[in-house]
Image (cartoon, rainbow, N blue to C red):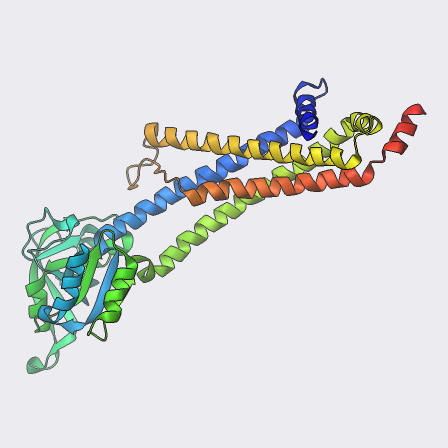
Length: 387
């Protein structure tokens, strides 16, 4: 019984001579809302994902930390990592100062064994030191210069508590395109950093690639090393993750407000639309259709219209993102890392882009229908026609 009424509503909306321009504009806005939300989330997710990916490529996806220990004491942990197929690299990480001539800069040095290098250093044949370009520029040094690494935490009492120093040549300069890495981090031969501290020890096991977080936490809980601690990249950079999440939330909120404005236009358009078909609804009532059935059919019409408008917007968004990813030109200047806008479509993004416009639009459409239901009185309306 409801289907003919729903067809009538759509037929009137499309074929009526006095079409409601305001309602058509609102419907177009309803199509644009999920389109904009999906494009926003997918492009921002792509940019954020690229940034996180570059950082994880250099700093790893997780870190096992502990007090300084010899490599042999970690055999229990490394054997379990090997059995899980996890890609890991022990290192000695120190915070120190780097000096070249009269220039000083703070630095985090990663002492790594040359027989097992992470992927981003695989093609680098170095013996001393690798620095990012921004850090080298801080001390006005370049490839081939002899710099000094000074550790204030390690003193030579023999010389009157003078910080220990290690002189090393800059073999390579690299760029990770991650500011917090390029400004402070460097990589050196593990033996040279161990010589600086005077101990043959390591204090980190840096993990790269994919891994099961539960397996790593299980290793920590079962290990005999009491101070062993595991943190994912997200936990270490929780402030950055929070900031990126806040950025996305704010943008979604702004676009949701846009949907709210569109819904106000839908409310006005529907009130005018229902007032136009008031006579037809009264005719249905006279012919025996219950008032409840008429309004139930109207609700179904609103649900169907809202659903297909939002679905059409999502379809246009997916198509646009596919074309942007496949044919997208280099729109960013040369100074940007990602010159093409990266795209990352997620299930969460699709659900958010569908749910927010659908719920807001249907809520306001339902309000307009209820307002019409309260105002309309078929008997009074039929009497007014006679007059």
